Image (tube, rainbow, N blue to C red; front, side, top):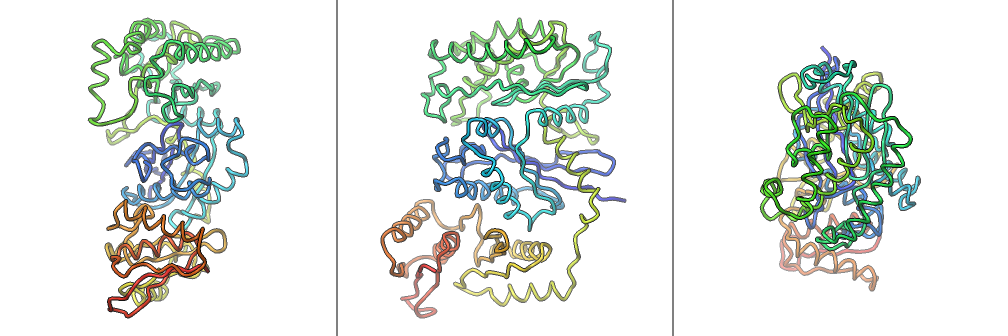
Amino acid sequence: MISPLTGIIVDCGSGHTAVTCYSHSAVSAIKQTDKKWLVHLTDKGNLPLTDIIPGSAGEAFQSKTLLGRLDEFMDSLEFSLKEMEIPSRDILFVGATGGVRAAMEEDRLSNDDVAAINEAFVSRFSSYFKIVRFEVLSGSKEAVWEHAAAQTIWGGQSSTMFPQSSAGSDDIGLFSGGGKSVQLGRKESCLSFPFSTFPKELEERQGAHPDAWLDPEKWDRFENALTEKIKTEATLHAPFVGKFVGTAMNHRAAKYSEISETPISAGDAVKTLKINLPLFRQKRGELYEKMMATRSPGSTYPMARIVAMHTLRLLLVLETMFSPEASLFFAKHGFDEDGKEIECEWTVGAMSCMANEARSKKAYVPEVLSSQRKAELTDCVTNWHKEDAPPLHLEPTLTADERKFVHAFCESRGEEMSSKSEGKGAERHVVVYPTPVEKGIVRGVTEACRLNLTKRIDDWMKENSEPLHFEPTLTPAEREFIHHLAAKLNLKSKSEGMQHGVDKHMVVRRI
């Protein structure tokens, strides 16, 4: 029997990054086993990949450069992966969608930047996963994979979901809405439309006031621009007919107008949305109060604005591009063969594609380390581990399976040590730390202390060439944080003074 493959598919959307774990069997049954969302390490806000672009809304990053911010992004991803149950590390696929596509179209991100991002992901995670890939999805590819997801989840359920539909085909189309685009997938074609809900003058992350969307003039500018785009696209297509599942932000807009999880015609959906949109805009009414009651206590998420904007877009698209008789069923998820939820996202189609590709490669089966080699690596790490030992840098000639073994061994030692892959290209190697490191930050060090130590080293690098001596009163965790930071900045760090004396302290030098 062929074992299922486990894949981590990372959805880098316009306003968030979702990390989903799937299990895929050889007979194409797919299950969603876990899901996390990436957050900034400092303010805990949503962490879309577009935040790494210099000049974007990524103020929560410490670094000012693209690759420096990418490193922090990958720290957050690595931390989320440690929190997930991953039976086997077979596939890591990172896909960027509308937000990154828009950044490339606006020349804020180049092809060389994308190549560097892919190289960084492969370099960081190839010692953990057998297949690692980063890709900026075209709109049509996103639509193809979302349509495949709809068929995987709801294929064969057409008559149950649309009992009153007169459409002859059993094919269920996919009607998905993201932050920057709308996807429409059918058997005959899969399309993507650039209908963005991220106008700069209404977007808080780009400097807008939280209530800017309540300004009639600003809202009208957004509505008029969106209407014009939708009308232009409508001239290129006949009205859409047939059966469609509405997902993602289209489902969210339908949910708060209470027309989700039930069949409805496009014409009836338009009538309901027209009634509710003014109430959402005016922040009043029973449905508005119900919607706001679902928000988590203390949340700063601009739910009212976002739902109003997506309600408007859904209304305009249905009214302008769909036949009033088209059949719709808005749903967030379906169920797998075990009756467990599986969300309809492009990530489902991507997992199926990547799993089939992986199984077709004979080189996919990894080498098996000998008992002697495992013992050698274990002895190397065990003999090194001692109080205040600086990080252990293993040679970059280790094979992928040898690196995986070291990572697994360190993880099994819990609080005693941790490991990370550092460096680029041929210099990529495993570094073992004597205390656990999470999110790239040593545990037991407060945020204020981290910022203080980081600033001291930054100031020293700008102004002084003499070694930087820290006070001997630092805790072991604080000393280890300095070791970690120095390694990232290509500096040398060492504990000097009497081994157990009062003058034992950390020293940082340039290499």
